Length: 328
Ligand code: NAD
Ligand code: LMR
Image 1 (cartoon, rainbow, N blue to C red):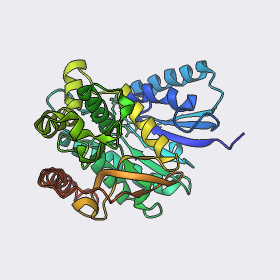
Image 2: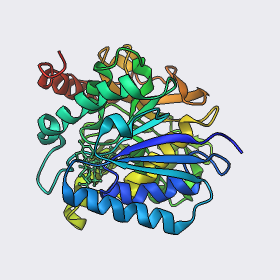
Image 3: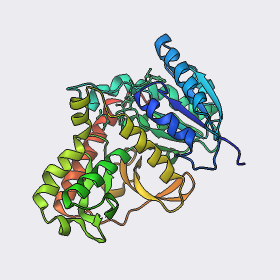
Image 4: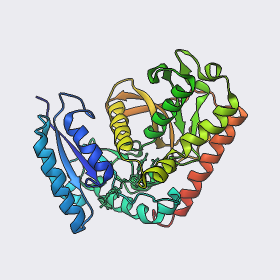
C-alpha cells in the first residue's frame, strides 16, 4: 500500500467541492492504488462549516477504500499542513451578467493569504491548482506570495475550456469525441481565451481541413468556447460545477501522468508572446509526476492567432495591473 497523499481542497462545501471530493476519494484523480487524506477547508461561516460536516458524513458513508482520513477546518494553517496538493476552489462564483474581472478584488484577497500559508506549511513537494475565478490571476497572486515554493508549482485550470473545445469540434465534425486531438487553450480563462484550432487533428487529419469552415472556426467556435461559462450560468442560474470538478480531475491526473500533454495555465517566460509573469494557458507535457515542460513548438505566427494571443495577453496584463497594489 502506498503512503497516502494529502490533498487540501478549499471551498470544499461549495458546488464544485460537492462534485469533486467523491471523485478524488474514489481514485479518479491520483489513481486506483493511491490512498488520499482529504483536508477540507471552508470559510469561517457557520452555514458553510455545517454543510462541510454533511459532506464529510457522506464521504464516510461511501466507504471509499482509498480514503484514509478527513480533516475539516476553517483554519488554512491546519488545512494546508503538509499538503502535497492544494486545490484552490473556494472563491465567489460570478452570477448572471457579471464578468470574471468583477470578481478580482474580492477573490484576489483570498489568494494572498492562502499563497502565504501554503508556502509556510504545505509539504516540500506541494503543488497548487487554482480554480477560483479569475483563476489565472488568482494563481499569479498566490504564487507571488511564495518564497519557498517555485512559481512553476502553481498552475491554474484551463482544462474545462480544452474539454469544451474538444466537444465542440467533435460535434461540428460529426465524429466521436476521441477522434479530436491536440486542441489547446492559450491565455486567460475568460472570453478572450484562444482555443487554437490550427494544430488540432480529427482522426489524424488537420481539424481545419476536416471541418472546412474557417469562418466557423474563427467566429462561433472561439466564441462558444470562450463564453460557455456565461451560457451555463444563464441556463442553470449557477456557474458550472460538475464539469469544472471533472476538469480539475483531468488537470491533476494529467499533471501526474508521465508524458500527458494538455492545456494548463502556467507562469509565462515569454512563451507564445505572453508577458513574462502572467499565468497563461498553453500546452505542457508532464516530465515527472507533478512537473511539466511547456511545449513551445506550435507555430501560431499567422495573423489570426497573433491577434487572439495579443488580446488575451492584454487582458492578463490588465488584470495583473489591477491587483498590483495587493501583491506588493
Ligand atoms: P460556491 O459558491 O458553490 O462554493 C464556493 C465555496 O468556497 C463556498 O462554500 C464558500 O464558503 C467557500 N469559500 C469562500 N471563501 C473561502 C475561503 N477563503 N477559504 C475556503 N473556502 C472559501 O462556488 P463554486 O460554484 O464551487 O465555484 C467556486 C469557484 O470556482 C468560483 O470562483 C467559480 O467562478 C470558479 N470556477 C472556475 C472554473 C474554471 O474553469 N476555472 C469553472 C467553474 C467555476
Ligand atoms: C466557467 O467557465 O464555467 C466558470 O469559469 C464559471 C464562469 O464564471 O464562467
